[in-house]
Image (cartoon, rainbow, N blue to C red; front, top):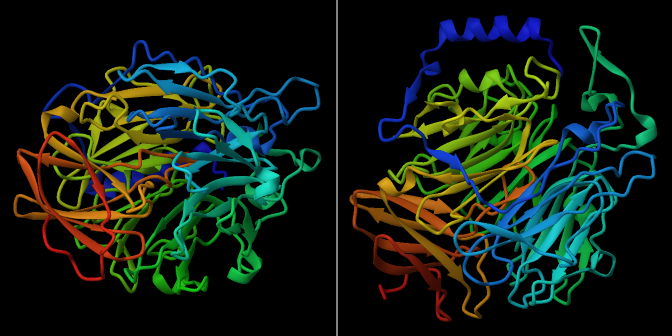
Length: 557
């Protein structure tokens, strides 16, 4: 996992000479895509708790969630803190922080909300697990994890132990998803390695002290599957699923119906271990099928340092594809879904070379310029010391503009006028200021986060959908297919994914110059579909499931 600079740069230069996909392009519409919010009101600063002892968790976090905590139709922010919890100095650990959106894209810190967990935090998942109409928070820590129940007033209660989800491992990614179609959200939790502060080895590269690779620890660690009992508690059925027998150094997670059979599946990106693809067969029966489906390793059989993951329908064939980001010198892995298997088409779409320059953690797919094609934003940061000062782990982030199944890097890097260089980790995407452009929040190790407001998104038309079940509760795991002009586009909810993050649950379509979207079909999480007809551009539309929805499409409303 840890490669010296003498290997990295010659390899990169060789690849540049062999592949034309390294070309970068200036944005033809504007100088920049994003600019940092001047007066965001966010005072959060991530603290890794690093003391010079190079303890592994210090280089891995932290996460962030974008979600509507107070039901006022805008996105609030929840930051996951590391803090001093790893040391034995007696320092008071720093808690996580919740910020409420004022409605204009600026924020105010919530005081004494009960969400200030002081464990050594990693990632976050959000969802209404108790079906009371408000969004709850699950925090993964370097053990134990925490479930924070929202009481509907913006205050939270730690119910981890009562609910049975206080897993004591090193949690990373997690997701709330209804895997068994019983109407409530189950919980899948990814664990990284078995770690303790007194078992940290000393590791060096070219004589320089650095963080150790996962193979230096008791690894890998088993993941956890918690089935929702429907009464506010969960049952750990990990052994039943088979998670006690198939391990990995998990960092990235996304849940999708990859084989389009109406059951939500699970993909886990593992660090220097084979990825996992758990195919849901119904009745809580899962088959680990990554090798057979072609996503255990890349197309050349190379196992990579899988970190962040994103999934959406890139090629327009109505099934979810997969993007996994990796360590420097390793290309991204882009797996095109062929329903029964995946094909690695990383080189064909232009992601075989440029990403190798950096170590990518966070990654999101979104139509930032509203041209009807998904773009890629990657949050980068080294795990070995580099040349930037004062932060030797810092790297500029990357932005790739999507077109018809290809991507080109945008200059300036990261889409910002001033190149922002920190050690980036969690990345969340959503429309923070509700102006129709998809914005970004990036957590930076031992630094303030980026709140990146979209300054190109309004140049194309757009529409956005919020989805609700017939009982009025927020729908999860759905996707929408629609005609934009004569082109059919499919988009998925992007709640979980990226790295240690949760994003805007609303489904966004860029429409380019089209003034309406037609033949809007929602596929709900149980595989059933419903046709909602046509809508004008420039609005957020609320779609509520019909009580009478059946397997076939309904008549246009």
